[in-house]
Length: 235
Image 1 (cartoon, helix red, strand yellow):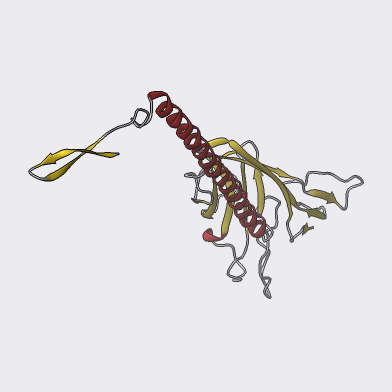
Image 2 (cartoon, rainbow, N blue to C red):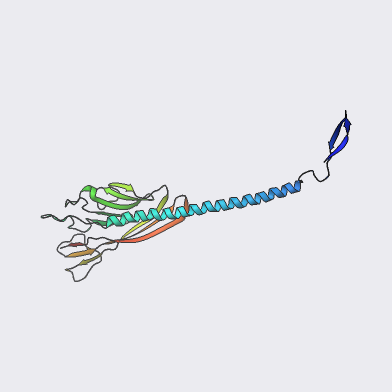
């Protein structure tokens, strides 16, 4: 507030006066303001963290489902072809004995099989396939003609070990076999057919368990079975 203070050389002099109570915020008022600001900031931070975590959880769940679904699709789609070959005139079947086109290797978390991919009536070394668990990764066999050893041949990963860890992969042969000329039927076919007529309806059951590598609380297990289209029949 301005008030008259006299004249200097004929010029009036004005002087500012102050009232009590116009000195600004008190320390208590500043502290209360800071506290309210911190409460608002904490609430905004909490909402942000919850939103980020929710988005991450949705991403983990969706990707884990997608990765396992892709692996299962590869296994099911390929193993259905086990034992298929092009029968041309004069050709002898390469599958005269059991175990030459399909074999679940006991205790090895592995299944081996093969088929005539190029339809040339023969099984080449690059037409042998397999799936196994190796060092927390599912691997797919692309070459190598051993039908009993899961350590030989070329194996390529089909799951991303940077994202998820395969904790278990179990393969179970659920084939049903009938020896036709015998008085009784057997659930296990003989290794060699011999003179008996044999029909085997082959089916593979498998269980795959996985978890997200960066957050092991996210886990998933899939259980599937696949019916091999080609029954084994020989006499």
